[in-house]
Image 1 (cartoon, helix red, strand yellow):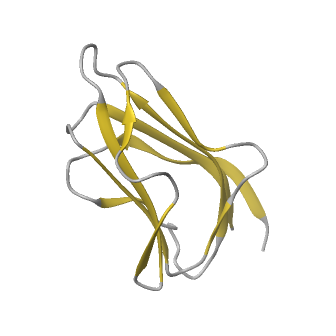
Image 2: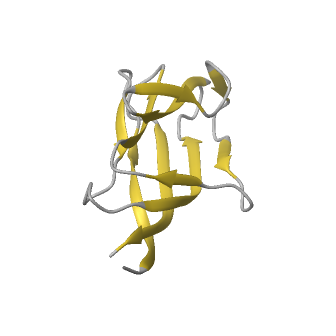
Length: 111
């Protein structure tokens, strides 16, 4: 197996905590190497929560109810950090306002 670098996921957060990324092929693993959140709202701050779920347990990867001011970008993972993906790993998130916080994840998946 080889690792292929590629965009892993992108979209907008909702108000309910839900998966924003899980491996396409659960039998294979990978690594998230880049993860950003951006508040696209012009006027209002938005609170966000981000978790890694492994084996059914959620672990926060940013402070609880982190506030993103209008137009702010949060680099969840910096260049020296990464999240290893296994078949039981999902990244989940929520926001206080739906459809305004954009997310993007990049990294490597086994092929």
